[in-house]
Image 1 (tube, rainbow, N blue to C red):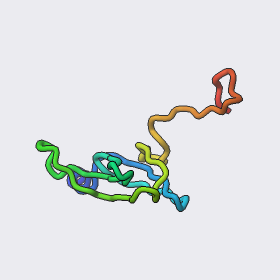
Image 2: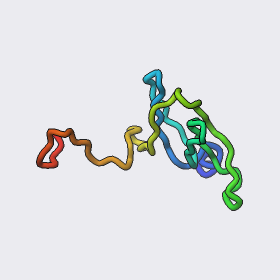
Image 3: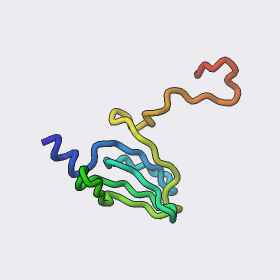
Amino acid sequence: MKNQENAATGQFYWGITLDSGHTVLANADDVEINTNGDLLLLIYVDKINQKKRIQLAYAAGTWLRVWAASVHDGQPIAVQHVMSDDDEDGEDE
């Protein structure tokens, strides 16, 4: 059943911060930002031919940031540490 669920919802987990301050966590295979600045979360309906369909979309100006999210806590998966400008030794607190 897990493979069928992934096919219907997308295999990756994404975080989106909206201009309202809310955070949305959603599944999708890919994320694109079109020329208007709209955020599109896409799923593949045919991976061989690279055909996608929109799973979820936010208009330009309604979203602030998007990131690949951890399924454990929703935090960005590509970020290991965040340091302030005051951190001279590279150690985080």
